[in-house]
Structure formats: structure tokens, C-alpha cells
Length: 139
Image 1: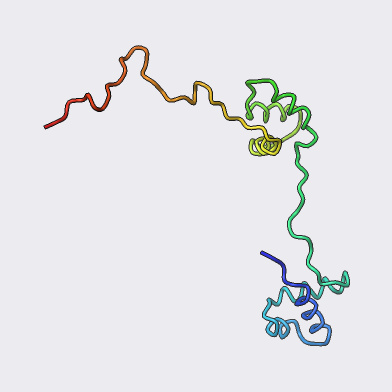
Image 2: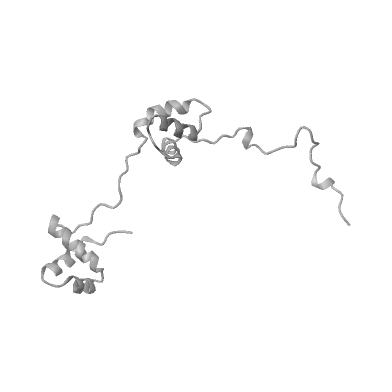
């Protein structure tokens, strides 16, 4: 979603400044009455009807903990859930997702690829499964 053009905003504000009502201006330019009122108020307060910046710039909450987190993750075997708990002990309240996003931005992934991720084979106590070709067919 984009803001309306500055040209349209200026024409709307000048229409209201020339004496036309906000409702009549809204109908004339095909915008909402609320937009006409807000643009006119902004023009009176700031001298411009230009839109404000869209979105916000968030400072990552974990930026101050970066060095500690990178040292801590160098120790193998630590999980993200453990890091969230340790951060809470350090009086930094963050979610699991915030910690995950921090490491994603740092280019660090947590794919294990260890024995837990391998395909399960037959148990040691059971014989291996027979191949499909060697099973008797039903009549």
C-alpha cells in the first residue's frame, strides 16, 4: 500500500483552504473525508501535506547481547530454548523467534543432520524387512 501522491494532497489542501468543505472536497477528489481532514490538519501544523514515513525501524533487542550470543553458540550442544532461558537469567526477555531471527541474520543455522535425522532402520532385535518383490502375491 502506497500513500497518495503529494500532488493530490496539495490540491485537496488548497481546495479546503479556498473555502470548500471537507465533505465536498472528498467527493470532488474521490478520497475519504478523514483523509481530507488529516491532510488539512497536517498542512496547518507543519506547512506540508506530505505523508509521514511508512513503517518503523526496529532496533534489534539482541544487538547488545551479540558478542555473548556468538560466544555462547560456539559451544556445541546449546539449543535456542536454552539460550532464551539464559537470556532471561541475564534480564533480557526475548522470544524463541527473536533468538532464531538473530542467528538467521548472522547467517548461523541449526540443522542437525545427526543420527536423529537419519532414516530409521530395522531394530537390532528384529530381522530386516523383506523386499516388496519377495513377498507372496495374493490370489
